[in-house]
Length: 379
Image 1 (cartoon, rainbow, N blue to C red):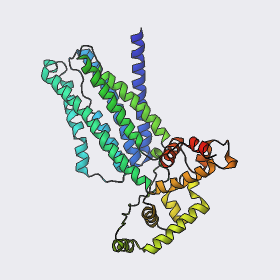
Image 2: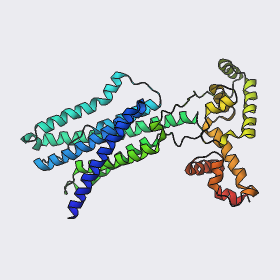
Image 3: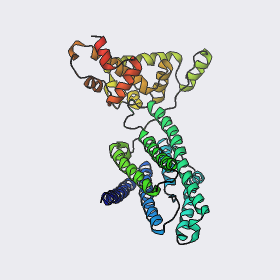
Image 4: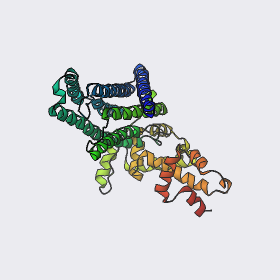
């Protein structure tokens, strides 16, 4: 009886995850936005991978095949699709030959799967060679997902740095969720591998079935994450400015640098004073979504000039520059008499932060203590 209940949850859970993935993919395909379309292909790959692993598990049981796991080729598309999505967010163009190279492992695994299905009734599937091929290809899939986790991590950090050059809040537009999804896959597949090796195959481990459960869970998480991410459904454009280099020791180099940008060293100093006065008088930092472009327009400057001035004078990006003002504002408000008893989070939100976790992290990094401890020590 308990076994039947578990099987029922497995069937319903995997089937509903595939249905959800396909429906979300259709919605994203209809959006007409290229980066949303790439997310749609990820959902489609998850649905097909879940279906394939479920069917392969049933085939192994039906034909009593001794192979541990039959490799599913659609898993080899998940990592590349995430990577291509991040490249699109980084506004990088992919050459056609490079795109073919990304899909080549999927093609080879599909050929193996076709050969596997064509020889289900033969003795070939019970030979050691077939088992070695199957296990080897499965290990390649596991290795590929691990590799794409690390290269996607690198792309996410690059995008995060670009966003910090243009945005004062990046919580809603960063791509850490991609890294989290791939990490869950790596941990899940590692767990299956360790479980099997620790028992030395002494117990029956339905690997394809276990992978189906992991992929279904990933799909549910992806659906949840997607509907919480506004940029999935809106084509947000981020103005990314090149980060200027800072010259500290050579006056001639510094002079040439500003001549190329159209600014002299004296102009940089004057503009910086303007920026400081504007920040103190008008407090634009209290706007959670303040961007480099928005502030530059108010100061009647180009994005590049504003970014260059901030970077040269304070040697920080726009994100850190704005949040330094927000932290100073919070510090003042925390010890103000009229704010005694007011919630710290309320003060932080009024200062321009839009996330409690981000506020606490930045405050502790800059002040070397927690907001509550700071308030207590400065009363």
